[in-house]
Image 1 (cartoon, rainbow, N blue to C red):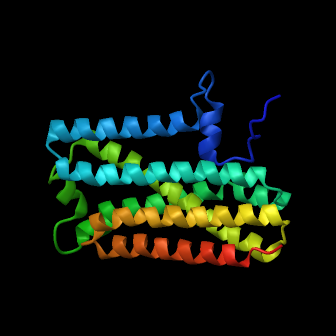
Image 2 (image 1 turned 90 degrees about the vertical axis):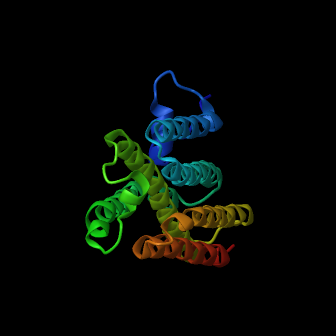
Length: 231
């Protein structure tokens, strides 16, 4: 018997990994591969181009994205195992809204880095990290890591919203309510992990407000959802 979840009941991240033909490395293997590929690339480019300051920031982003992968997998596994109503599961997984939110966050970030920030007084963040003539391959890797991070942040947003909606809309049996609360609190854990990014945007008011505001908003919404979950 195949106990793997059906597509439409998984995050897009899970669906991509599960759909790769002939690849069955498991959750731990997928996350380890994610970290290894990105971190090796960051260290190699830092050595080649002498960008060690950027490498520290890149490593922090990779760690937070990997934490997001762990959280996504646990949230998906726990939610599918719980007896939550079908509309709750469809809204959380089947809508793929987390991808839309991730795209919006990524486009906003790229616009900030390449349009808004260079128009402000002082040295732009990209110049600070990579110099006045950033290597193309380094920028490519940077955007790839940032997309990975933005997608997981979008997932965190959506999980918080659905969690609050579900807490207001439904009553659950005791074990299911306990699982739903744990899922919401796990989302808080991922939000708190993103505090690791704040030192790298401390002199960027817009990014500092965006990241800090996101952490606070997800924490408040998810804690509220956990508190309102009823039996």
